[in-house]
Amino acid sequence: MLQTAIILAKIWGVLLTLVSLAAIMTWVERKQSAVMQDRLGANRADVLGLRIIGLFQPMADGLKMFFKEDFVPARGDKFLHTLAPMIAFFPALLTFAVIPFGDVLRIGTLEIPLQIANLNIGYLFILAFGGLTIYGTVLAGWSSNNKYSLLGGLRAGAQMISYEVVLGLSLVGLIMVFGTLQLDIMVKKQGELLFGFLPAWGIFLQPLGFLLFLPSAIAETKRVPFDLPEGESEIIGYYTEYSGMRFGLFYFAEFIEIIVLSAIMATLFFGGYQIPWLYAEGFQFPWGWEWNLPHLLVVILQIGSFFAKIAFFCWLQVLIRWTLPRFRYDQLMRLCWVNILPLAVLNIVLTGLVLMILN
Image (cartoon, rainbow, N blue to C red; front, side, top):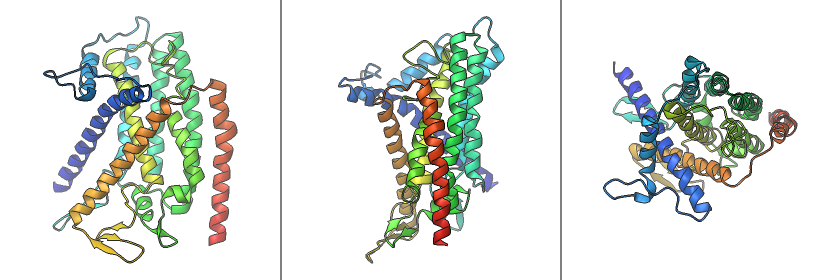
């Protein structure tokens, strides 16, 4: 009974955190673009005259979508038109279940792992459920009975399937180095030291893998410069015929994906919740200093470190979105199959050779 209550508490905590962060990301998207373009950004929504630099804007957006007309094309497939945004939204939430956001919280004799589901195939779980979002975008385009929507859905299907391949291959080197598909073990191994002082983070062990993973991850979220399925500045897009909360689910799913991909990058390449030289007892510096800390403070620092890394990668993705122009579709596909895919295979070969030499 106690274990069930703990699991439910972790699920609700993670869900509330993700939804809250996604709502804040809608504000960050607008505010960061405004700062980059030397303007104020969204700042009109207020409560009792208070605007707080536009932080009430996500609430206003949610209310508008909730009360907006929910339109379904007369000749569209109503069931699939309703199902598509759900398929795009919920798998993005599920992928966070296997991501460890802390080590172990000890309360007396009770040990609580700060991870919802500790699967020994956590890496495959992320790829499997992340790939389900493809069905949502394709079904959205097809069920709308709109040629522009269908074109956007086909673009989305081709793009996401292509980059799903290189996304998986770019991470194979990490599996070879760490020897596991279990994410919490990957994170714990990144707490070890290289050369006696350098954290064994994935970015140091697989720098090429990270450089290949980052553009592939952005392409999976269908954001600029890979936003051809949506075409935000054009009419073409797989959700052209969507409005109200159905559109809101697609819109919200995009920001959930940004947060989840940031969490994956932090987990696989930047040590997850690890802080350099911080262990369960406290800090142990390579030059011999030690600083013992209470267990609860160590857990808080680890969780704070994890979400700080997520915040950095969310900022980076928004920065890229408002900096680079959109690719042509032939350029997008050529980048995947001609440039990134051979480099991903080369990275696997080089990693294997290095491991053979070291062994």
